[in-house]
Length: 148
Image (cartoon, rainbow, N blue to C red; front, side, top):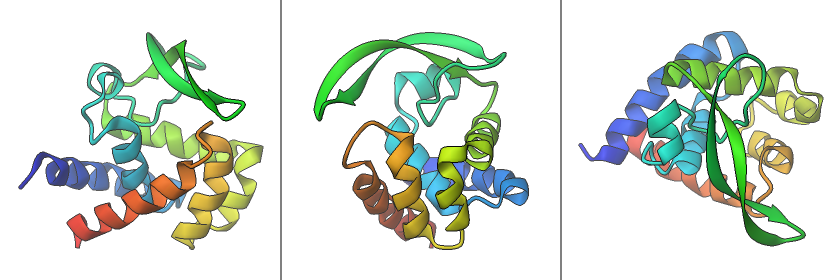
């Protein structure tokens, strides 16, 4: 089993547990975690169990790191404060909670039974990358192939 496959399997277990309460599509969660964290290899995921680039908020531990954002269609590097988590599962639960309660994700929630529709709607607000939804859809197919 490759490192990517083992990451996908571990992430799928956490995503299924989180989805029991949130009803968010578990395979999309795995694909998003793989995309955002480079299959769990990013510094943020290794250091802070943050697999989605979730910015610091609330009482979470905080980690300062550089990140790439898109402004006016151009990629720029910025310093940002990110949330730190004790585990992958806690990070996945936080991500699902953001999607469950954020008003900008209402259309995504309405499409939680349609993975591609969910990605389209979530992608409009989750990341500044204008091609985020397309990248996430491609990753979804890669993850699906590994987990079948």
